[in-house]
Length: 337
Image (cartoon, rainbow, N blue to C red; front, side, top):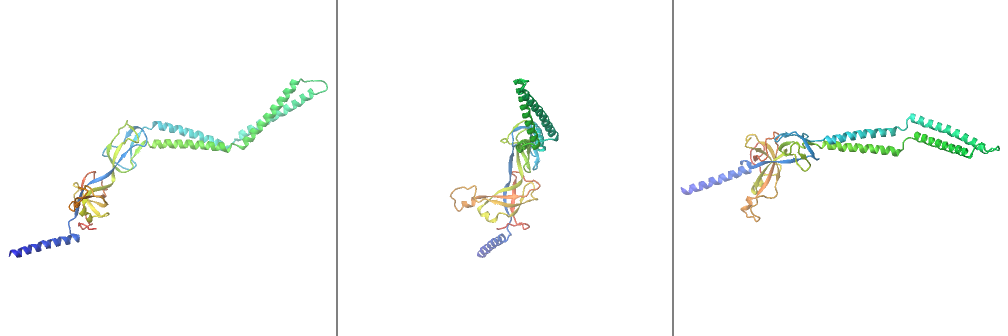
């Protein structure tokens, strides 16, 4: 009787083991569970320029969005410089416009009148010169002195030079400004515009904008503090991406693979899981007890697994414990890759 009981017990144990193996191989095992913690990226935000902080608009724990204004520097000096640059641009723009428009009709008329006056004066001085020469060379003796003749000659030469100068001025007025002068004026205007653009960029840099969505973890400076690119103003925790950092032993590596879908629950929402995907499995073991491994110690090696999660309601917080179940959708059973 005892012999039959032993045989029956062996058969029961063997049958239970076979049934468990069958269920495991065909998806009937209990869900494979990992335990880890929520991990997120953090960003230190600082101004790109130096200056005194004028205002800070958010507090620790506030939700922020990409493009939101977080802080401002005092920009009074930069705005005054920008106003001066705009005035310089207006003056240079008018100077260039004057060169492009060329000589005005009134200026041409004035130049022609100057030529006519110089012509009349040259004609008169030429007549005086001829008279003086005739009187000085006359047979009845010197009616005029040598000094008077020299004065008439000098006056005629000066009038002729004035006429030549007036004609040259009229020709230049008719031609208009030189191309080189126009190019120089245009270059000066572009330089002033570039300087204004630099000032406007510096003014824009006095506003600290959020580069992404996140949560303010730490407010490191206050209004009145001197800010610089080397001094962080805020410490921001990003709302995306988020992942669960967990560890699996070497025998469990055969049960997971990259891209496997899963569900993540926390103690706060045990019945409302969020979806996730295995995004990373470490290729190097951690927490290795010894450099030389025996067959028994190999199972103590742990490999990091990162499970990327979709958390639209922002329920998962940094460091929060989480339970990860690697399961097929709808089956609730462990999946073997």
